[in-house]
Image (tube, rainbow, N blue to C red; front, side):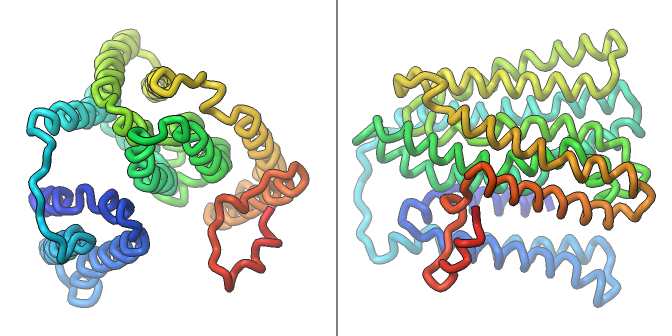
Length: 374
């Protein structure tokens, strides 16, 4: 299973960038939907319909992986089909000097993300580790949004870095603004209602995982846009790798000190989030120096503060009501608090003129719906 997963990852790698560069984003959406649905069906159908075991589920997963691999190779060569091959002028030295720092950055990121789990699993026991590993995670929609933004802006930045570097700043600002509008309200809800989310996902026995989910959700406030597309376009892959290396190395002694002095387990999560914030700050500085922009020019501060304030106000009514209906089923609690939160947020967006029309793209037939969007 590990082999098939690795094989598919190598095949799919770069597919989104290729298709976006050739303006075939619809193919990405269709590919993702079809392959994920196929994987789901091949994994669960043998167990549910044919009383299969986990072995049959793994075989189904491998079959879906092979189909995904074949489809991804077909789509990779689809944009250039029928074109003649020409010899590239880029040397191997240039390729490796550009790509190796990205490889090392991936390894440093892997070390950074696994450090917490190492110390919690070794020094806090199996029960605490289960609560930590279940709770200390991103809500799936957050990496989905960030990775989608990265896929779209990477080829744009690559072209502008050569021809018109001055236009990168406004595009960056616009992408950041749209990402913040999507992620900040969700992160605010997850921070204050993390216990309900964890109970719905894993059961009442994992309600304590909500503390770790709240801490991890704080990261959503500043990790709202990926840096590698712009740093890659600017040729700053070494700087990108160096930042991840520094804080991957720094986090290890910090966690060791916390464990040595028997600090509460949630302090390890806080240390992780703090180091993530430092990484974001230094990467912003690198981008600012490369584009000759100040951090205030790269970040829409007033808009971010407005969204934060509106998101916080939207939590007040459901949070107050939560203590009144605390004994209700957790799924009903999630439905009630979530509905009240987003209803309040919707009303406050109209009252404060915070628009979402630049975020939502509709075709001509659905344009009348825009009048209901702030």
